[in-house]
Amino acid sequence: MTAGSLPEPVRQAVANIARTSRLLVVCDYDGTLSPIVEDPSQAMPRPESIHALRSLAELPETTVGVISGRALRDLVVLSQLPPAVQLIGSHGAELDAGFAQALDDAAKALRRRLETGLEDLVSDAPGVFLETKPASIAVHVRRAEPAVGESVLDAVRTGPARWEGVHVTEGKAVIELAVVETDKGAALDLLRRRADATAALFAGDDITDEKAFARLAGPDVGVKVGRGVSLAPYSVPDTEDLAAMLGYLLAERRAWLSGERP
Image (cartoon, rainbow, N blue to C red; front, side, top):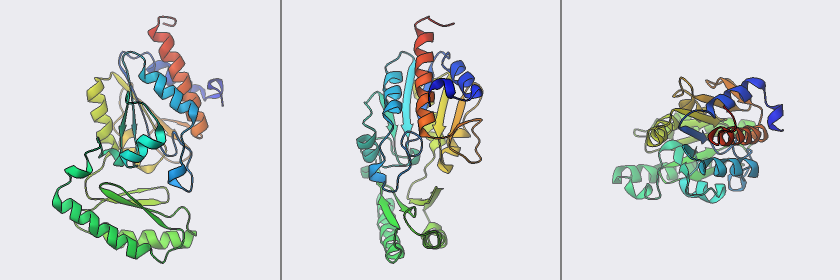
């Protein structure tokens, strides 16, 4: 898709926010910058989206970030984004590489208990796998037969998810149990304060992104990637369309900053 094929309401919203004094652009990763794939380690971002984010981050008065459910270390490797783009992992909880070491002893012990409990729970569930992160463990059922996946999710919900100190986040074919509170909305607010942004654009595809959409107001723009009910007022069908939208935002922002467009 080209920028000219974007829905007119999306084009207009992007053109308007491109003209704000201090712009913040933040995206989710999986399902937004990268198509959803069965193997999370193979989730490569669309080159057009990465080019747009890199280029936006180089513009004056423009701040760019990615808030992902992934561990920060994995996000850095997969995205290949430069330091100018602020990366936040673990659904907004992981701001820097020292995050895991900063956990207190009780949190570390609870994480070990979760890992043992979840390993036992999924050991006889074909297609189900665990993704271990510094402060959480995600149970993925995308590769499993639907009945197997739902059975595992129910067992997690009625078991480890109810343990004291566990924070639960559910997404598409995944449930994640964390030993710290996670909130993409709080992470978005943090980036907004750091940038002193006059308006923010946030794009995401999953249930976990709704906390960020809920923080948008006034001149902000929220874009849902894919189908589904969302707090975001705008949507694009898939990651290819999101790449086209980011390219259009780059062109409009660059032209406005250079004085080429009013």
